[in-house]
Amino acid sequence: MRACVTADIEQFSDAITKYGCFRECSQSPDDYHALRILLDIFCEEDIPSTLFVLGAYAESNPSILDLSGENGHEIASHGYTHLDLRSLSSAALREELSRCHHLFTARGFRAPYYGFNTLMVEYLEPYFVYDSSQIPVRSASRMDRFLNVYMLSKSLMEIPISTVGIIPLTSMILRMCPLSLAKMIALYVLKRDGYMVINFHPWEFSCVLPDVPIPSYVTKNTGPAFTKKVKAYLRFLRGLEVDFVTMEQIYELYR
Image (tube, rainbow, N blue to C red; front, side, top):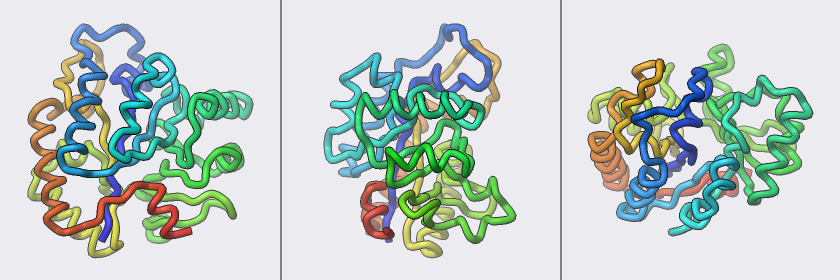
């Protein structure tokens, strides 16, 4: 059994862009400190991960790329800005991907907000060999077919976030569910598929108390309590003797 732990490396202000909150948050978390917490957890638990780095964040903070590349982590692309790529014109989408590619090369990509449609495939193919933007439950009629790794085209593989029923294994589920339930879900997915893909965000490891009107599920159960929960969850997975792998390793196994 294999577990692929991923993280979208972005700022909290990026994460809430879709809610129209463009002003500064007086209680905004320290994004660099939060990233350090996340990477320290991976280091303590000796877990290689795939880090989907937002281009604009890396451009304004170049040390993030060095930090993210430590301890065998794979650096992948999260695009340049944190906009829903499905809303962009063809020219804007091409520019978005090109700007990030000129900052750093990566074999994999994940769209902000998991915002993906098949029209994007031709724009991703020149830069990447795999994508991890899809959540199968968003295409319920095709869910059984798309639960596992499959080819989007002859050259682009899709490695979706793991899903059980209507529940994708995003960090939000871990924040909202009791740890015991999160463990049961992980066991089910590992036995069903032989592998699992989960995802985190650095800002979740800081106490997020913004003075902006966003849904409570975005900020609920963040901070030290979540840090403790993630450590326990990862140690549980290690106790199952799973192999922790990167997205690139999954790609090599399934291509």
